Length: 80
Image (cartoon, rainbow, N blue to C red):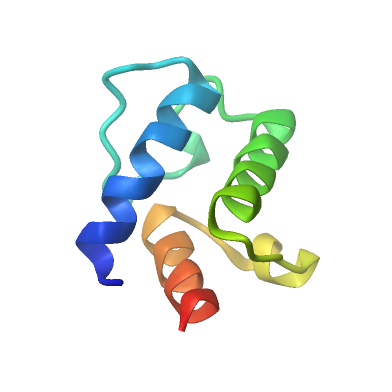
């Protein structure tokens, strides 16, 4: 799976969590850019991706993330 595949798979999840059918994901997109991105929606994002990809994140991995690009890189390492 490559970066483009990941973005195609995660975009619908982000759109559902934030209830925004037009949300466009970019590597630099962060919680500061999305008004609805609070601690609860962050947890929903993490859990939704764990379910979708059949993986688990640990707390330190999630706390280190600063943007969508870093999240995609983390997903790619989990899927190898």
